[in-house]
Amino acid sequence: PYVNTALVLIIAACLFTWLGCSTSGQKFIYMDLTQPVSASESGRIGIEPFMDARQGTGDGYVGYRRLLDQSQETYFVSGFDLGRSLTRTAGKFLKMRGFETEEVQFEKSADKLGKDFTGYDFLVGGTINQLEMAAQKKTGRTHVDLNISITIYVMDMAAQSLKTQPMSY
Image (cartoon, rainbow, N blue to C red):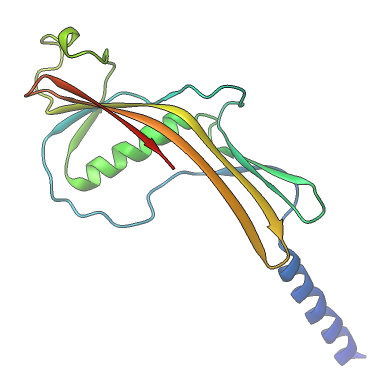
């Protein structure tokens, strides 16, 4: 009887692992850096909070994963503020690179900066145009589609020039 019970428990554990340990509903993720970054730079950067300009999504929405039973997990960033999460992560990255950072607000136009931002080497900001993960759980694997479109603004204070860099994946 103990062997049968142990065997049933082992099979149940294997099936549970094989089918996935997921349940439908809301899931929260914490955005953070996962790779070490070397401190090889110096200077002072003002970071403007990233603006979430996505249409038709809820606050903090990141995406979903459809499960085997066709129910759905829906993912949000903790705090329901994707712009803040990306700003915090970008700031952490820049600090790890060796920069001193501070949150600022700036108009993305070289002629409107004036003397308000003396002491900064760069000002950085961004707009989240699209960010969504759509995943489908399959037996033994998960298929993931990731759509990202972010516009990064970098103001070089010494050159008084603004660079706009669209990024898509």
